[in-house]
Image 1 (tube, rainbow, N blue to C red):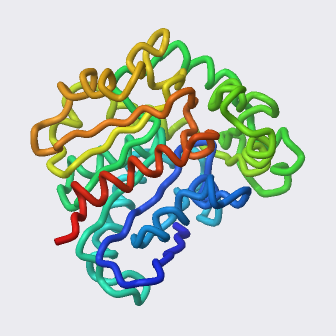
Image 2 (image 1 turned 180 degrees about the vertical axis):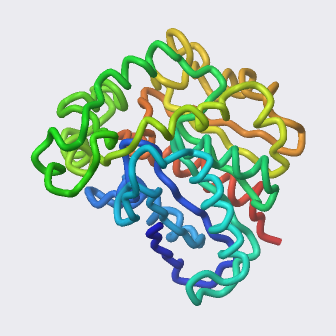
Amino acid sequence: MAATLCQPSGSTDTVMVLMSGSNYNGTYWDFQYAPQTYNFRRAMNDAGYATLIVDRLGTGRSTHPPSATLTATATAAALHEIVQGLRHGLAGAAPFAKVVTVGHSLTSGTSVMEATAHHDVDGVLLTGYSHALNIPEVLGVIATYHPAVEEARFADRGYDPGYLVSRPGTRLHDFFTPENVEPEVLAQDEANKEVFSLTEYPDGLTSTLPGMSSLITAPVLVVDGGRDRLSCGETYAVCTDTATLYAEEAPYFAPAARLRTFVLPESGHSVNLARNTREYQMAVLDWMRTVVAPKP
């Protein structure tokens, strides 16, 4: 898997592992349009934390094996190896004392899988995730996918038919709200869209079933957009506000998780790219500073 380590200007003993979900690669975290607003990696580095952006197998600069071999279980196993590598010194970097996994949508699921299996992280940030998954809406989004080879820009890359991509023009409805996304962001999002395989979904979605997340023993922050059609249940009721999301999610986590939640108002599924995403970044930094890596 391809990964990029970015260090802050000063020293740090804490690193955040950023892995995007299906439909995205590392550009989701390192967005180049108006980076002072939309670049999550830069916001974390500016606040003094190192980041490691990882492309899942089959995406971005990572290798593209046969699509049928891609699973969330394999991604979770690879994430565990990355966590251990960071603790011991990855690719020549100094070892990190604290490692935080940061997922979006599908990779929030793999972060849950890794944390419950290995208990080796210091924090788990889950975005675009909840236990109130709206299955009809998920199936509706899946219906907008088609083989990547049907689009000219992907046709000559050697992808097998199991590699899918969102159809042109569908992402606004699926991942955003029209009033809370800039046209330039939407255009860049379409330009950056990524291939993936549906074989990553079945085991990945088990993380949203009752039971698994209750085994997490590290601090957890769950973030959703207030109008996330995938993660907020019917009529977005689960994401009415931060307190409502907490009340809905708290039964699924043990006290050791010290659960926090945050709802980004009017945002769809892709919270990194909402107009008001800085509010979400500030909520993450508050969690990092007060719960995960408080300063003496």
